[in-house]
Image (cartoon, rainbow, N blue to C red; front, side, top):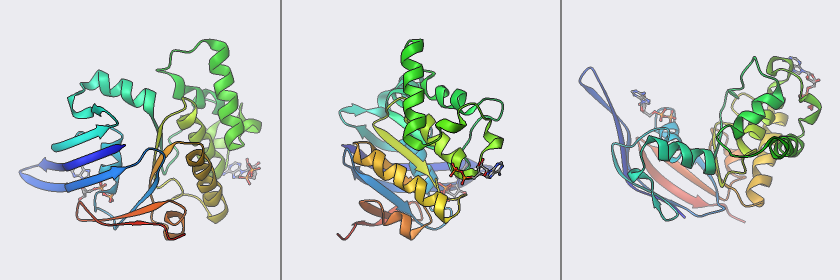
Length: 226
Ligand code: ADP
Ligand code: ADP
């Protein structure tokens, strides 16, 4: 169980305060697939970055199962992220100078695993997203859909309990977007908690629950009708 209690996040620059998250109260069950929607600027990315512990709230509490993550220092949070989370972004964020398999292995950087085991994990992750035939290619030799599948392989190679995806289909055409959604749904079916920001109502409908945000708050939370 993941629980956010009275999470606030504001930015101050040149004496002007912007409230990105006003008061977020949210519970996410282990193994749930949640979609987050809302207009541009309502705080979706800030919420996802808070869940990912790459953005520190101004106030409130973040419980991840039995851990109070607000009590961890930077090193503790880095370890938490490496062991527990996988990140997927709208713009893929692959490193152009590395091959696809080298990019994917980066997902294991903070993992203690020997060479043979690392190799096995990379091969399995590539298989899982159907990118094995592109292992030795560079990102700019791949289509957008292939790059995003490779980015998902990098996110899952360490077997994370929670996948955080910020508009993962935002740069993809319909067919490639659906491929990415199918992969996320299948990872969720195998037990991963998935939290995804999306602008696509049809992709949000593939999640178990849809959360709508407005002005830094959750204004609606509805389970999918079955
Ligand atoms: P969304 O993802 O829904 O578009 P964001 O979480 O990116 O919204 O942003 C929420 C609000 O916080 C916006 O008003 C945005 O301008 C502001 N904001 C986000 N990041 C920063 C930052 N680093 N500095 C100042 N303001 C920011
Ligand atoms: P897949 O066979 O994995 O479904 P796609 O349908 O995404 O591949 O792409 C078809 C072919 O076109 C692939 O061989 C892919 O590498 C190539 N391709 C697509 N877009 C680009 C691009 N922007 N740059 C280079 N090659 C591309």
